[in-house]
Image 1 (cartoon, one colour):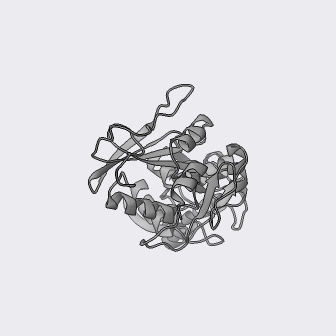
Image 2 (tube, rainbow, N blue to C red):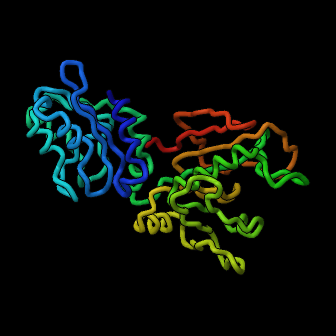
Length: 312
C-alpha cells in the first residue's frame, strides 16, 4: 500500500512546489476505500483527500501515507485533526516529516490512541529528497554530475569535447529541466562558455544558471556569479527557494563541494572508452566517502552510476 501511495504522490510532481509530493491510501477489510494525493500548495493534503474519498468507511480503517500527517497549522489545518475526526484505527507512514514546525504527527496520533507505524521506506524519503534537505538544512539538495571514461578521465586530449554519448547528454538536459539550479566552476565557464539550459526536452521552466568562483564572467555570459563561500552561497540559494542544484563543473568544483560535505548525490556517466591521458576525477578528501544505495543504469552505450553521499 505504501508503493501505491508513492505512485499517487507522483501525480502531484511539479505542481506542489514548494511543498513535497505526497500520496495516501485508505484500506478497510483488505480493500482500498479511498485514495488521494497532494495537488498544489494551499490545497488539501493527500490524507485529507483520501479520507474524504473514503467517507464513513474510513472509521476503523488503516491509512497508508508516504509521509506522516502534519501536526501544525500552515496554509491548511493539521492533517492529524482530520485523521482523528475520521475514526481511522491505524496510520502507517512511509517517512517522517523533517520539518521542525510540522513533524511529530505520528507521536501526536499515538498519544490520542491511534495505532501508528513508521515503515521507514527509503523510496518514500527519496521521493522528496530535495525537499527534505531544503526544509531541514535550509540549502539545496546537491547532485554532482560528471562524465568519465573507464579510466576516470574527465577530459580527453585531442578528441571530441564529449565523453558521454548522445543518450546521456539528453538525460542531462532532462535533469536540468527537473532541478531548480545548475552550476559550474569558473574553469568550465572559461573553457566551454556553457549555456546550462534544458534544451530539446519537455521543460516547463529553465533552471537558474550559476557560476561558482571568482569573477568576472566573460562578456555576454548569462550565468549568475556566486563568489562567496560555498556554504553561504547555498544558504542564500535555499532562502530564495532553490531546493535542488545540479553541479556540472569539472574535478576542481567537485572536489571543493565534496570537501565541504555539500554533495548529497553523485551521478557518474561512464563511457565505454579509455582516455589514456587527461585530467582524472580523483578528489582529495580527508577520508574515503561511503556511498549508499548504488544504482547502475544503461543509457545508450554508457552506464550511469548513482549513489547517495548523504541519505535523504
